[in-house]
Amino acid sequence: MTDLLSVRDLRAGYAGTTVLDGVDLTVPAGTVVALLGRNGVGKTTFVHTVMGMLKPYSGSIRIDGRELAGAAAHTVARGGVAIVPQGRRAFAPLTVEENLTIAARASRGRPGPWTTKRVYELMPRLAERRGNRGDQLSGGEQQMLAIGRALLRNPRLLLLDEPSDGLAPAVVDLIAGVLEGLRGEGIAAVLVEQDLHLAFRLADEVAVMQKGRIVHRSSTADFRQDRRRAHSLLGVG
Amino acid sequence: MATHLVSVLNGLAMGSLLFAIALGLSLVFGMMDVLNLAHGAVYLVGAYVAVALVTDGAGVAAFVLAVLAAAVAGALLGGLLAALTRATTHHLDQALLTLGVGLVVAEVLTLAFGTDVHSISAPAPVGGGVTVLGETYPVYRLLVIGFGVVLAVAVYVLVERSPLGSVIRATVADRAMVAALGVNTGRVLVGVFAAGAALAAVGGVLAGPILGAQPGLDEKVLLLALVVVVIGGLGSVRGALLGAVVIGQVQALGTALLPEYASFLVFAAMALVLLVRPAGLLPARTGVHA
Image (cartoon, rainbow over the protein chains, first blue to last red):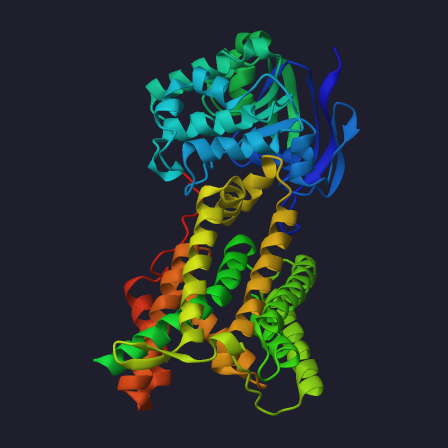
């Protein structure tokens, strides 16, 4: 299977500091890779750099063979990448419908299976709340909105940054159900997640980051079997 | 009572002009954190376009031509400023850059038109007065108030009800996220910058028959527009409208009732708002960061 995302020797950071110190990571088409690691190792920085929201110092980011390192976020988005960012970042002054319409209109050049109607079918709660503003939604509803907005890009690669963060367990379960429902869509994903149960439930493969580098890569099943290794890599059992 | 009515009408006319001028300043600041200190100079370009094209006794056609010419000149200047300020992300650099452009533009205008105070006459057909509750009031100023109302409705529909407006409001709230959805925010920013500057220049033409044109007017107008934006709240259309109406009234009623304190009252109003509502009366909602 060909690699949809291929990152080589990526270096990036903020204001001269180095957060990503030579990241190599590949994501085959249609595969979900969980990116694990302790707080502050550079997971969010990695996601932002791939999305084009942060310019890398050096290195290569290929999406479907096309070099996009240093490209603007809207160019990366048009290359088939979408992000469900940490903190959701729903547009507060816009209604649910307007939040989705921005993504739908911006994606007219990328036809695909996802329409606003289908997003509402996947997440009926959003349809009920379509007239409410972003800042009137619960955390779970904002997360659904962020997922719906990303899907309307008809992405080939989805970057999910801590989708369970700050949500009650029942809501996490709901979001996990939505994401599981996407398994058959053939969308590749990088899933940054602190909740290991959720990561193992959704991911085919696991990559572990330490100090700005990928230090381990295996299938999810292999990773779960060796608990001592998992503990030493993540500091959890 | 009737003299107060005249003051209220004067305030509304001033408020209409201030709304047209402050709107671009507010949206540009809200969307890209650029405080465009050349905004007053763009206004002055419009005023001098009126000086050049609207001669005494000129008809409506010359006035409309001046409005169109000012809109084009303003849009070009706005586009230039947008391109220049994108070259740096440092706020102080951007402010100094726009201040420099503003000084150069104002100086060029002084070279071209001299230091004289120019008065601009209202188009002949609407140059007269009309009796309002027993007081004679200039028809032209009533038209300016009407322009303000039409502009407010048009901008409301565009920004609050159209797809393009959604993108503008979302860009004010969270520009990086809008870009991540595939929208070329740079183009949106240039468009808003150009449109806002065009409105400021048109404001210069429309204000011509009331305020005239002279060196230094750019700074006075910029200062008033800044006060409007601070009172209304950054990046907010409704805020700019409310701020403009408030400052128009404070200025007009202040001049009528407390002439020796009039110039001070505008800043007192701003200080009062900042004490009670530091973000302004109707600030734009920013992104939700849970």
